Length: 615
Ligand code: M6R
Image (cartoon, helix red, strand yellow):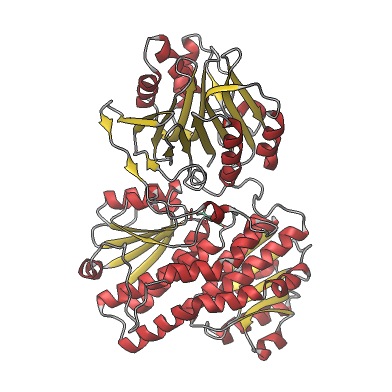
């Protein structure tokens, strides 16, 4: 979480910083700040603000009358981890002299012991953050006569945790020194300037000459030049980044918010993701997946990992691999897998699903899996993401940048790609016959169009949803492939509308939770004809009998289901294992409309950040 942006060598640095921070707000938005050098006095100035969801906007007004600026500027938009979201804890943080400023994304795990040592040496800490210690460590190194890059390198050597840092100091006002361990940093260069940001999208408007900083590397960015070294001080060559996104991809294009834009982009995102993956005779092609079919066929077990919506996509991938690949398959939540004694070894193929490719729980989970000898494939929307680089194989969704905190187009693109991967594995194993493979391939080829049909009904879904705008309790029920659909629906409603929502296997309700069903409770059930429909409807009857209001995701033209429930969100029919792709749309619209009706910010829901780079 947290967004970092820095620039050196331009005449209008504050404008660039504010625009950069705005594009990074999806990473956190509870406070923001900038540090710059006053051209008149030469002094380092810091401006910080904590304004919950509108910090960068407030920062813009606060720096409107800023003095002329010289040298490098760094900025930050925060998602609080250590210390409340207050002005005092907002970044940048400074050292005792006020001549060093730092912005940071991640967590310094040994900050307490470092703070104790610093306090014992007479430093004064002014915030509750883990970040501030770094400014003081650098201060001490600079006082010992080191240059800025060397001071940061020496300080970094004693830090524990995952972090990305950008630091400026009065001793070298043109330079920004950046460093990273696990958390991402992208560096940009033009002839006369140097830039740094937490992601590619924040930089593509300024330059397409982008570089990735490796783990435990430190770079010194000056106008027109970048030099990097490793933790031991040896020079390193930075890797040039292939840029596939344009600036237009990250704009709202006339939509009220990014979420509605991204809901409407889903047919395109799915079509782009599936482009070239299915060949005419039902065969699969995943160009970037360099693991050969024979190796794929050699695994005895497939374990899908992910967090949040990506975990729900993983659950669907698990079912598909099990069904078509006839292989033992599981899905686990990354943060749980990492700390459990899971039986994973060289016989296991791990498929990690992560839109950002930098979710720290998933990153550590794949590191752990590889440590135990498993093969790892990452499914990511970000080319060259940290997880992609640390995997044996990679599959990319091509959904374009997703800015809304709630995952929409990336989730459905993941679902589509996981089906291709499942088919690919099944073909490699020889466990799916030609006819069935062709049916799945045909289904996938129609997925974008079916999602398009669902998206065209967004207004209808939202009309239904608004009838339930004041509801307090919603149960999302489903069976088999309907369960991950229900789980995703509940997550969307919770994170966007702040409504208590629980997903449950429909058949399991009678083993306990049914005691919570009473008049006023809404039950949203996945009741498509492909997924154990009769059993699901029997479970629905049990809910109705206790007074629940029933909303069903049902197939187009299914009058029988419509007659048994209070409201219907109708979707075009498809194969059972492809239904989660289409059914995601009414789920998204349901949560979106209730959130909007309650006055919530759908792009920036409270307490959340798009990319979760802390444990
Ligand atoms: O970048 P990732 O796919 O790894 O992110 C995983 C979750 O944090 C993410 O899906 C989250 O649950 C979304 N806000 C859901 O809408």
